[in-house]
Image (cartoon, rainbow over all chains, first blue to last red; front, side, top):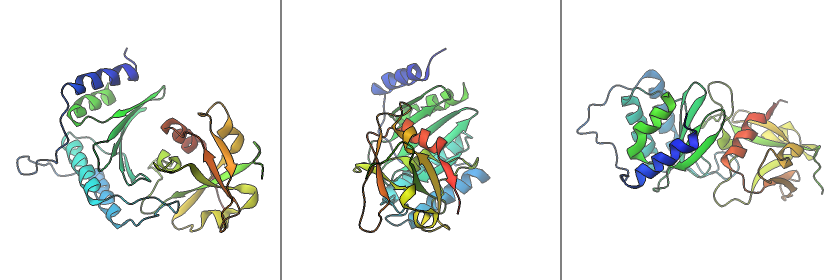
Length: 147
Length: 116
């Protein structure tokens, strides 16, 4: 059985030769399924982050900008289209946005930023692996969660 | 001022817009992550503070306690806790060192909620 590190390493190797720049969700040419009740709640949370002001955590946290929120919503819609429920979302203290999905004792944390430096953590009880997030490999990440 | 391993420290965790508490009641590790330009994670030294001063706004924050000796132990990645008094906060201290995501997750897991 592959360890998380081995799985992620092979994903990175594959992605380096096949990675795509992130593009906003193609709303015009895609039939978007209705958000599940849970994902709609996550969507509302993401929208509420527009109301945040600097220092929302009382320790000097930055607020997420509109582009980051848009990217996070796009990812939410993609995951919802794949019938995946988002477990948790919150802004990071740098103004990025975390989206977390879970399956049993495994979880994946996507950290979306307003740069190309989005990151992903694959987490299990035994270990966790962090790397750059390759959007082209979303299906493979989801496979990790379901295996 | 010397901070002892026996000391405890407090960290506020937001609970409203945004809420850092997950559905299962656990705290997200985001609460214990450094900002990119930060030199240390701000905390309050328990023996120089109290619940009311540390939580500031109970409607927006909950308060979590960590033990200094635990933060300095091999469980973590060479972290320390140092005193860093501010004019407006004599209890202000910093968790210093390279706080990795795994460290933040441990803090989120081991933090004990403090009530008034």
